[in-house]
Image (cartoon, rainbow over all chains, first blue to last red; front, side, top):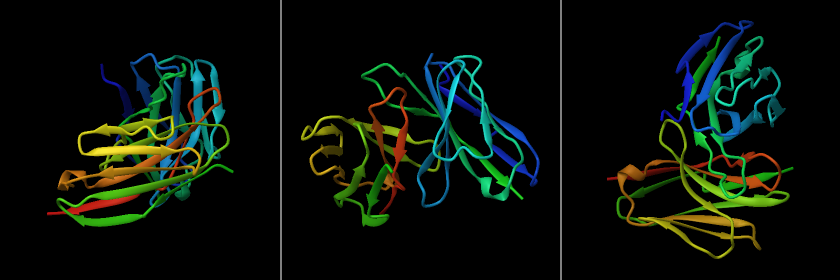
Length: 114
Length: 112
């Protein structure tokens, strides 16, 4: 049971490049989400999904796309990287069913855009 | 707009001290409040609080929620250097899904 895994751990991009951050979970969780963490700002929700085929925007969705074709995977795509997207990105998952709302976090991806 | 405010922003204490971290919130349709500890990597879950006045404890850590005054505190007694971390407070709303609204965090440094 690996929990939530993310790849890559580190990435450097040039402005305008695109890339996909990978996230996978093996706990059969319905809910998956992407956050970014910037100094002094806590974690901010980018996109989330309540199940395969269902995604929605969070607090800071601009410049990012997501899809959810399987329960296990929830990739985050940066369409045209900008320096403002330099951040640490965390993927998280949880059950949606009532009574259990703890979110399990992946190890994070540190992204630098130059 | 939902808001979660943590105080203090940072704190330095000596080993053995007791610390109290604060979290206040303004969230529509509140469902639960969660505390996480983050040590240079992924946040790890500490507590989830849903009812006022019921203390949750785990070793030297404890937490309580006041739904009338809209705040929670996290207490750490007999602090150790291993308690040095960022402590994050997050609030979950009663809506389909499990979106969390996070505070900015409190940076705790415990000196030996």
